[in-house]
Amino acid sequence: MKRETITRMLNDIDDRFVSEAAFPDPASAREGPERIKHMKKKRIITLALAAALILALGAAAYAAGLGSAIAEIARELSHSVPDEEMRKERPEAAAYIDEWNSRMDEWAEMGENSDKTAQSAVLPDGTTITLTENFYDGDRLALSYVLSAEGPRIDYDFGPDHECFDLLTESNGLAWYQDLSETQYLEIMAKLKLRGKVGFVIRTVGVGDHVRLADGTDIGPFIGAELDGNTVLVPQNGLPEAAKGQDKLELSFVVKTYEAYIWLEGDQVYSYYPVADGVPVSFEIFNNTSK
Image 1 (tube, helix red, strand yellow):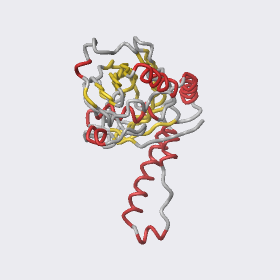
Image 2 (cartoon, rainbow, N blue to C red):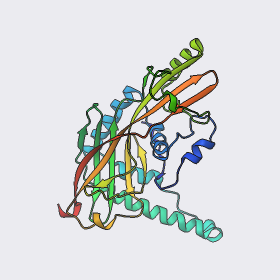
Image 3 (cartoon, rainbow, N blue to C red):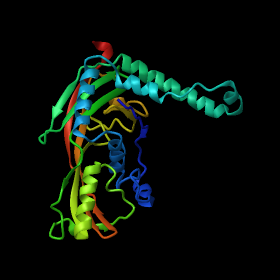
C-alpha cells in the first residue's frame, strides 16, 4: 500500500489568510483554520469505497498487534543523521535534526509499547471512529485513530431558493474540488457545461482538531501525521497538569460533518462554508505502567 505522511502542527494561526491568497489549485486550502487542517488531512486518504475497506483492514491489523502506526510514522519522519560536514558548517541545523530524531525515537518507543486494543464508536449517520492504539504512562500520550466514512457526498439540491444562497461570497481562490473523486468532478463540470450554472453541497466527515479530557481540558496542540488511514496525535507541548499521573484518562473527540455550499456560474465560483457542528465521542484509556 502506498504510504504518504504529512507533518501537522496545530496552532492558533488563522490559515484563512493563506487560503485566500492561494490560486485555484488542488493543493490549496479551504476557508477556515479547522477546515483547512481537516482538508489537508483528507487529501492523503483515498476516497474510493475500496480504499475504505483497505483502511478498515489496516485498522484491524494494527489492533491485532501486527504493527504500530505510531512507531511506523516515527520511522518515516526521522531524518538522516547529520554528517560531520553539517555538524561543522551548520551546527544549528544538525542540532535541530538530532533533537527531532530523538523525539521520533521516543515516538517509536511509545508505539512499540502502546495498547493496541481497538475501541470503536458508531455515530448516528453510520460513521465509525476507531481508536486503534494508545500509549499513556502518566507523563506522555500518543494516539492513533481511523475514521471510516465514505468520501465526500454531493447533493444537487442547492440553488437560489435555498436559505444559504444569500450567504454565498465570491471565492475564486478556493479549491472546492480538491477532495472530490474524478467522477464527481467530471459530473459537476458536465452539468455546468450543459446549463451554464450549477449548485451543489459537498459534505465531508472529519475529526475536529482538538482532543479534550472529560472536564473539558484541551490537550492540544498536537503534532502528528497520517499513515494508511491512521491519524497519529502526540501533544506538541506535553500533557497539561490535569492529564498527568492518572490511572486512566477519558478522552473526547469531536466528529464533524463539514459542508461546502458551492454555486458555479460561468467562470465564477461562489461558496459558503458554515461552522460545522460536531458529535462528541469518548474513549477511556489506561495508564500503561499500571497494568
